[in-house]
Length: 123
Image (tube, rainbow, N blue to C red; front, side):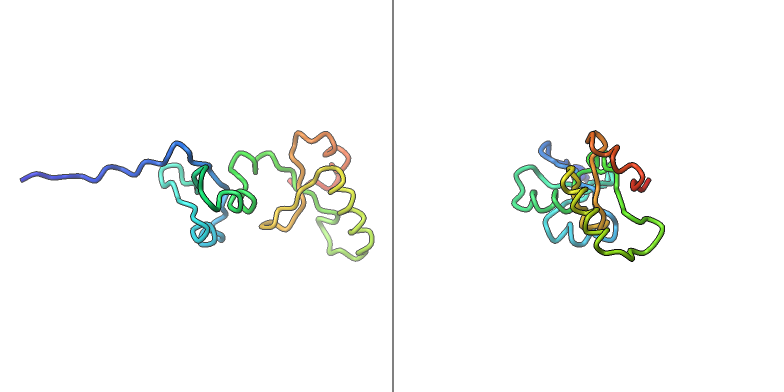
C-alpha cells in the first residue's frame, strides 16, 4: 500500500505581500488576493491583473509600518469645516496621501514635511 502526500502549497516568488485587515479579507479575495497561511499574510502576484487595485487599497505590509497618520482634531468632532478643508489642502500640498480603509491622511515617515504636522500625528 503506497501513501501519497500532497505537496505543500508554494507561494510564487513573484508574491507581493499586502496589508489586509481582517474585516476586508472578502474584498481582497474577490479581487484575487491569496492568503499565505505560513506567513499569515495576504498577497498577489506581481503580474496579477488586479495588482494595482489591491496595492492601492491595501498597500503592503512594510509600507504601512512607514506611515504616520494625521488628523486635525483627534480628540474631538470637527466643528469648523473651513479650517478642516484648509488643513486637508495643506497636507495634500505637502505630500500626504489618503488611506481609504482608515479614512485618514498619512505621510510616509521619511517625508521631511511630516515635522510641520507633528501635532496632528496619531500614534
